Amino acid sequence: MTEPQWQTETDAEAVAATAAADIAGLLEGSDGPFHLALAGGRTPERLYRRLAGMALPWDRLHVWFGDERAVPPDDPESNERMSRQALLDHIPLPRDHIHPMRPAMATIRQDAAAYRRELAQWVPRDAAGRPVLDLVLLGLGADGHTASLFPGTCALHEGERSVVANYVPQLRAWRLTLTYPALNAARRVWLLATGAEKAEAVARLRAGDTSAPAARLAPAGTYRIITDRAAAGEA
Image (cartoon, rainbow, N blue to C red; front, side, top):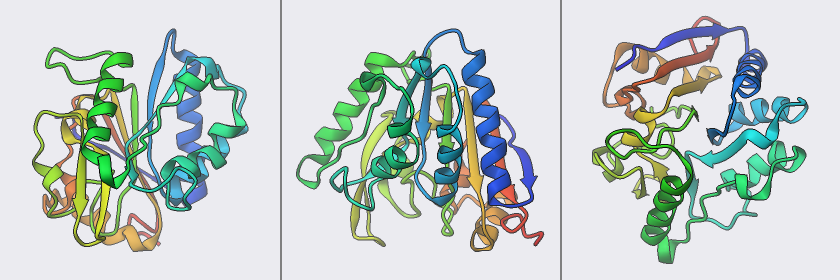
């Protein structure tokens, strides 16, 4: 496990600006396909809008999703919809370089298996057969969840599969999510947290409180946690 590199920026816009500049550098420095998993939420949306205004070698980028709700892709709750509106519809990305999760409640376990197959088709794998994404972006919920790894849910115990269907009782909802095996196999994991409402979750993460699912991440690659001053409890 790599110990996290903690970084505190002034505010949410500064977090987005830092992450956007660093992603631009990674993409410009890549010499082949770059596999990026997107997160949902307000903080990543700021980041995506910044990226959308940059001239980058977009043809190298393959976009994946860390999790998705079992809703249609045009639903206001869809991570894909937000990502398209903020970023994907504004950059010259080849259509087959976008790999959305499209879960439906009636077929959600089959949808998870289909996404596992798609990852296996496109993304390099490690010695254990796990997909090795170049960068995974994650958010942090006030309850300590990340991706759709929520407290008390079955996906927290998945030790092999890269993607599973996960029922979240507290939300009465099904999600697809990348699992710890997939997240931990990535070359880079960046967790972004902004706002005072995340301060308690950030404190639990810093303390290693494993009742918070995000605190159970154990990436083999580079692990950055980027917060603003409010989420760090400094505001």
